[in-house]
Length: 186
Image 1 (tube, helix red, strand yellow):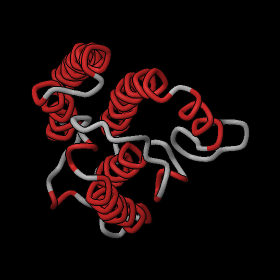
Image 2 (cartoon, one colour):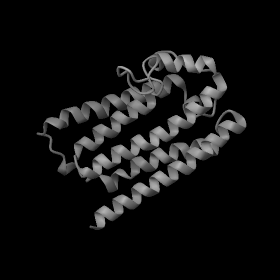
Image 3 (cartoon, one colour):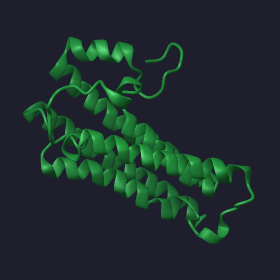
């Protein structure tokens, strides 16, 4: 029973911290059109805290990974592939633009032609892959928490981008899915 309470408390804490930070992020965007170093660091810290919380949500002992499971190969593919694509995308965009500290135009090329949020998608692959190494209800909760935190951040950024780039951003949104291209969903 202690595990359930610990998971619930941590989940509520992460969501509360995320809500606070992304409200602050929205205020920075409204005030200056970019994030301060403090707000940028807080935004990154939300996802670092989420990653570190894997120790509560997942077993995380290498000895408990079932390498014979059909999920093992798929988990590694998501984990490694997501990490490589995340690093590549961040590297191409640049750290300052990735963290909202630099506002130098709307990026619509490269992976941004396929998804408006490639870093979210690729880190999501890492999160799902990592959780599949230790499949459990708490791991599924950890994945859902990531999705909620990512959605909070994305909504904040979208509001800023629409205000900043207007019709250009709206047109981009009509052509490019927020996450993945599913029929009828952008």
